[in-house]
Amino acid sequence: MSKKPPQQLNSHLPVLLEQVVDYLSPRSGEAYLDLTAGYGGHARAILSRTQAPQKMVLVDRDKDALATLTDIAAEGGKLVHSDYATYAEKAAEQGIEYDMILVDLGVSSPQLDRAERGFSLKREGPLDMRMDQNNAEQKTAGYLINHMNQAELERVLEIYGEEPLGSARRIAKAIIAARPLETTQQLADVILSHHRGAYKKTHPATRTFQAFRIAVNDELGQLERLLTVLPRLLRPGGRVVLISFHSLEDRLVKRFFKEQASAGYEAELDLLEKKAVRGKTDDVHNPRARSAMLRAAVKK
Ligand SMILES: C[S@@+](CC[C@H](N)C(=O)[O-])C[C@H]1O[C@@H](n2cnc3c(N)ncnc32)[C@H](O)[C@@H]1O
Figure 1 (tube, rainbow, N blue to C red):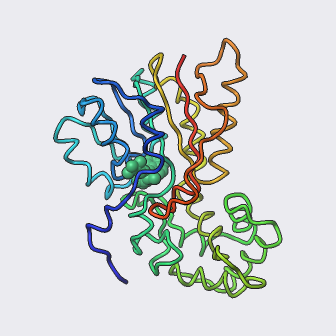
Figure 2 (cartoon, helix red, strand yellow):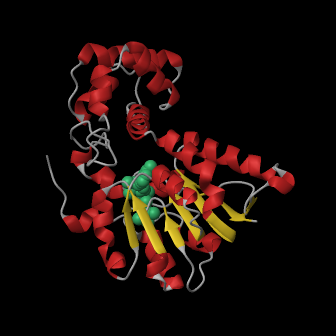
């Protein structure tokens, strides 16, 4: 297994940086909550404007990511190793409020690049896919792939991978026939060998990898729990930006924002844009940006 040198692992480019800063419009001394701090690209841009590290809370469930933010902690910033839903629920219970909140969902480039994390179908590694590798209770993708029955696998592939029922059934069957599967390459090969016809740009296993990543990290459950408490975490006039990378996440955010928009005087948030702001489709430096969908709101 090849390991990339550390300087390359830190090369996560924040998506839609200009737009994030515009919508959050940081002012000197304001409080910032980053629920998916990652490698701190957005957080550092905000910090340069607020100049208030002691009012920054940076949450991530990945210890590798938090380890790159210790300089902000040294200036008084708070680093929190937690999943964001649990942190948000606790903060809401304690009545903590912020001027700005950012949620930049999904995986970071360094997570994708490191073969041993098991996220990438292009890099041979163990089928892990846990964003928090320190969480021994969380089942890995390998565990789910090797233990789920046909109906459970089909469900994951159909709901989280958005595979049509026929191909979900075919892939689930192929997985069961090839078990035990240990590595990303083995999983990708099983799906490729059962794929009907040639493929052009997108590898036929892409949706399967997405499906297991979402299942392993309970990505949709996390987002639903967060949206329930999100408005309570903002001060009046506080701004929130959410960036999602697949339609399942964006659907939840869109529905939540739509409910807010139609709640009349009971609404807690005003939407800053009716439609999602899309990432640049031609950003060769940052392919993640192509699927980014940003939504922003302000607390009434
Ligand atoms: C796209 S990256 C964030 C990049 C960051 N905005 C930057 O500029 O470097 C997403 C990060 O969110 C974290 N993450 C994803 N889901 C999470 C969750 N449910 N709870 C906590 N962190 C999560 C991942 O570990 C990853 O580091």
